[in-house]
Image (cartoon, rainbow, N blue to C red):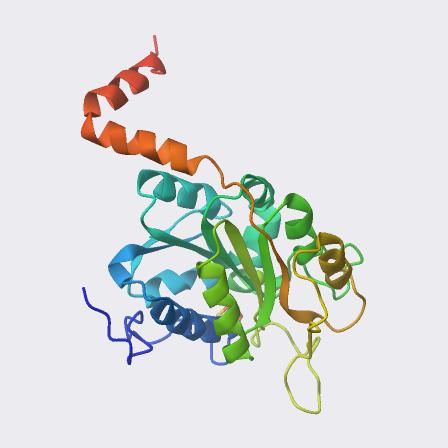
Length: 280
Ligand code: SF4
Ligand code: MG
């Protein structure tokens, strides 16, 4: 399928958006569409994998292959897709609850293994789909909020960035860089839920949440510097915190094996037989 590089919404199904008016996730969807077109991939080469929640509605809006999975389990599903066909561009999308609560264990170990996946976390500090309960990243009234960027850096993600849904050009550029990163790339997208967030973190004068940009003096290869940005008090930073290259998870090796198995289904059958459980 040829893609029309002049149509920045080639990846949109054109359906009416399922999100509430003003939801940051709708802006993330638009930005992702634009970044995918700019990256030169075709909709037929892209698989988007999500968990469950408002952010996961993106599977219904995107014109690509998609798996709307189960809560917190998007990353293992995505790894399976990538292992089966390493030529696919696999984008994982989900919310802060999905990433840092029920899916936190998968997130930590995926970051550690460094497979070639891009993970977009739409962080609104709440569970929007179930009426706005605070999620683990909620800093309002919860003294022990998880530091999303700190966790990603500590776990070993090789590309960590933060963007804001209301700053689309910057978000598009960061997602574009993430898509081309050879390893596990994560963009944490601050994405307000106007329906259930009643103004927390919103600057009353201009009506949008405040952020500050990471300075050009920051060394993106320095993890300690990146951690100091992640844990800085006050208004959150946006920009690229960390980017390094290190060996990717043995998907290359494993995928080669999978390809061989595709050619020889009998090999796969034999391997499955070895692990067969027989109920008596
Ligand atoms: Fe977006 Fe909040 Fe509405 Fe969910 S409830 S669609 S997060 S505005
Ligand atoms: Mg959320």
